[in-house]
Length: 225
Ligand code: CDP
Image: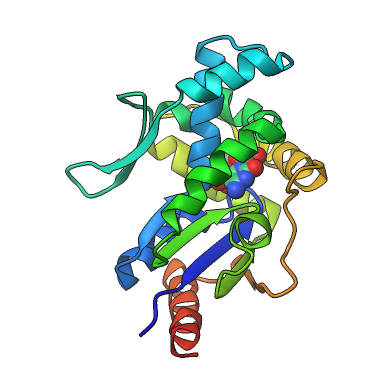
């Protein structure tokens, strides 16, 4: 069967990453978490107090950033930034509150898209994000646009954060998701939108297994075309 690229886009916290990771595992594909890349850049810029309105400082900072993804002992993918495991740090509310501002900067997007396209060079990739089917891989064989009701997304994200020992309230999480969705859909460069040829899946009332199954069966159809 031919190898394909699967692009999964959608709003914040609608389960794209967990679904994409499981689909990739099942198919023996590489999983690319584009959101983790924008989060890692945001973390670096915050740590190094880089002024976002200084193009030269920003460009210099982007050249210092070396991102990689490695599995831990349990097989979970971890984000590494310049030799440091930043997986926990990039999920903090401090990063969540700034990431959409950073992700709206064209120079940041150019740098991340380059890394993302490299991951897809040999196909056999599942990548989730906001502009994967529209900008990064417009030729992807399968494009999924995931949605879920805002209250359901906030509840799920709060549970995830709590499991990681990160403190937050439901109100904070809901406000953060609404703000990011607004910024992500209204920015000038690569806004979040459903690609014309994407299949929309609302997973508000689907189980995790059902969503994964659905995408795998769509992928198998595309692999045979
Ligand atoms: O997991 P969650 O839905 O909270 O977000 P994420 O996928 O980790 O992405 C974090 C942020 O990165 C998003 O809110 C976007 O601002 C940005 N992002 C983007 O601009 N383009 C992408 N392809 C992926 C993420």
